Image (tube, rainbow, N blue to C red; front, side):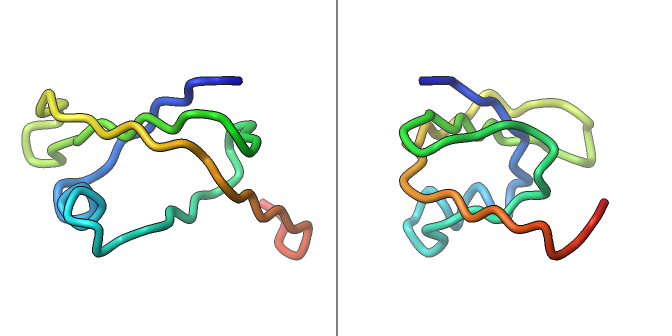
Length: 70
């Protein structure tokens, strides 16, 4: 199982933390599988730095499509 670290902007980080946001949709620019751990680190776009807060979630579902080419 992998640990994947990604940035999360404050407004989304807060929604994930509160439970209002229960899934994450991302561009397929990294390899992820069910069971991997997604580490979302809060990123402040104003200061261009991490805030120090993070959330770790286990990936329970991965949807892949070839509908759109990037």
